[in-house]
Image (tube, rainbow, N blue to C red; front, side, top):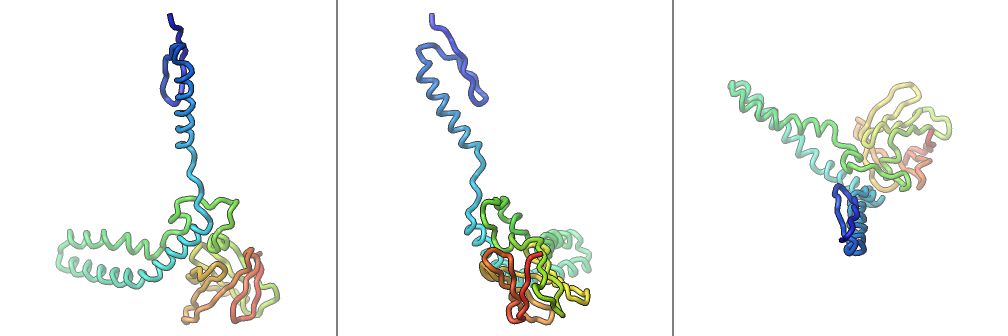
Length: 211
């Protein structure tokens, strides 16, 4: 009479006879290995892919922003038209279309929100990620700028020595430069060294260091 052994794997239990031991044990090991491989976390995205995705999304945002703004204006007009006519159902339908677009326009998703994965510390982050939350002060005393603060991956705040400050949208122009625009329309460029420890205000002859 054959004796039995019990083998556990995954969520299943198998009763195996002596004659089946060796073949079945091999199968169990193979199945367990396959299950472990499926349960393993996916590998992090390559650094260059992260940077490429960021540049791609930034380009899309720059290209579509004017179109979206025009669409929002037309939606507002249509909503007002329906409201004045007393057609509340149509006005609500337009508002449902308008609200998510307006929210996205006011606050586009951050890099981490777009990628849905953290950038591992073993990889050098993209420039926008490296600048996140950093403060930069002049290496030599400046009569104009006190510091730059990168609030998030799309806004930089420039504080003057007088105490006044301005918050500006910025975009990553290349691997080592970002651009932002004053309210006057003047476009400015900030350039960084390879390790993102030093910053130059291009054309202004002001060098900065990370605080």
